[in-house]
Image (cartoon, rainbow, N blue to C red; front, side):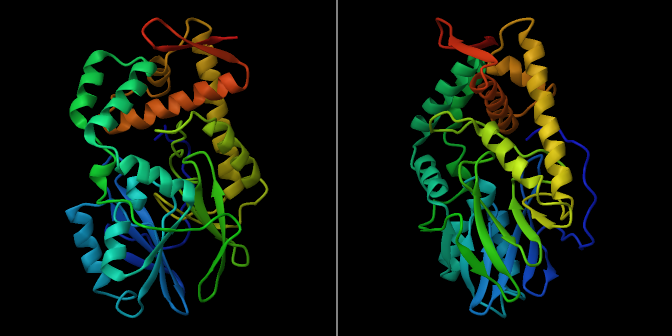
Length: 345
């Protein structure tokens, strides 16, 4: 989650409605799956190969999503071809949540990167108390008040409640390939939105399934990892965007949210400017007083946030502050209560 920047024009492809599937090419379909959040949908994709179908991402686990899959599986292309494999781009529940159930229903193999699979396993196996303790420790360090910490204790594991379980998975990595009837899909793994996010691209047709790394309307959430060592996720994302500057603007991008679009390099340049402006904004605020993650979040997201949105916004604020520390622009030190304060170097 981040503030919107100028949206890109839609590609000349019909947008599916919630729960619908539309053809993009002879071997590619696009499904729009609803979500119960402000970002109210996720895009899934289906590739047709000689041996059957590959599904890219699945939506969260819920009764409503199960009903959507019931309807989809009862119609083409699923009645014409078996699902052979399910590729999960990353561990976030809107992408992996229904993967176990869909695999159980169809017998399809689940494929994802090892890091993302292990991350999902680590989070789903935490009980409510352990998950709440982890979040309370994180939010106390961020500088949130006691009322929010108390609410976390009652909330429990808000990751596992959007999934049944993490599926067993085979591992794929950067440089691997998948084929479809007309495509030779190269696998790439990038860090920024998550820790080893899979993207697929067909260089001959210049089609890129970008997942959540490149979106046409909003900026992908760039947050420090949960339940892992702190890492400079914004620095990784800047490296990714610098590579995207070399791609040009003639690729068709099929993203994880919103609509299909072109203009890869234009979007990458806009996202670089956006995050650089946010870093400058935080440096300006820190020139007046040291920042906590909470005060940085309030500066970057001056709006009322619900619990779900607060989680992503605080992680993004933390990622920007940590990047400034790694760039030697700021220093971080905890106070006597364990709250981290960031001040100019």
